[in-house]
Image 1 (tube, helix red, strand yellow):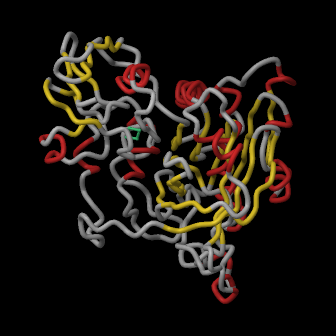
Image 2 (cartoon, protein in one colour):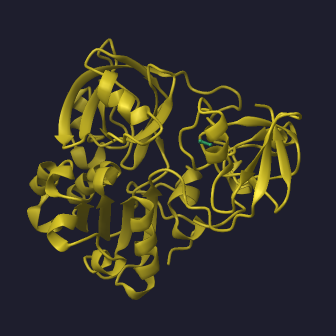
Length: 381
Ligand code: FES
């Protein structure tokens, strides 16, 4: 297992500066309730309180990439270059409705707006300014509405805003790599596969899904090296794969990068120790399951109704039953979208975003934060 406190250098030999790397991708952080401190270290190059201006983007193209998934190509409206990114990065998009959602970038970071930037593709991914970003979105009718909005209303010409790409799932220079994708989870792994191929790494990719028509980008992956890509569908195998089945594809000592639904990640985590793999980095869809919660109560204002939060549900899920308009995005405690004001009660803050000062001032992220058994949190809703 990796030393989770000391991430390896990136593909270009630089020490990793993004503190989210350790907290969003390392195997050991999954159930840790004490993640607040180290993440509060900010990038010293960017002064507090001065976030980079939002990117103005226009949808330049839209195409179907699977039965229920579309790819959007996003460009600068004036055709200018966009901020660079590296495999594993995501974009925080603001949709026309105001919803904010995170989507992994699935294009090629070496696709430069300036041909001179890509003269040496093996060396250019850290400095090229791309001409466009690509994301892919699966339609989730029972989700929070973001994917349905994109599928139903976002077309070529639609204007969107975004934050600069950020990487919470960075790709390392391990010589042997296994990429495990569940459905649309292939999006961050597709650039990793390209990068692994470009750098001559010993890589494999297993893409799983219900059926072949639900697997986006199968042709692009096969075009890299068909011998390294394995498509595995539930309909052909009678159900989803076990963790051991997935990890059997790992070259000895491989680092595993996994992106998919929670049951897939859990299966891989359980099987890791008995596998030939040496380390696991992952990115999960949506919220992690609550595994060490206690039942408590959230009250909507001092005189409002009290809502019971069971041990295995988030306060956000319970609050949204009474306040469906309550916004959220990551459901993992790092984006800050779901912030509410705590008026009374002692919270067990489990987010990865708020500073001690913000917490002391009453900020609470109910997607992950909880309270001790029997406690009542009064929130300003
Ligand atoms: S939804 Fe992102 S912090 Fe709660």
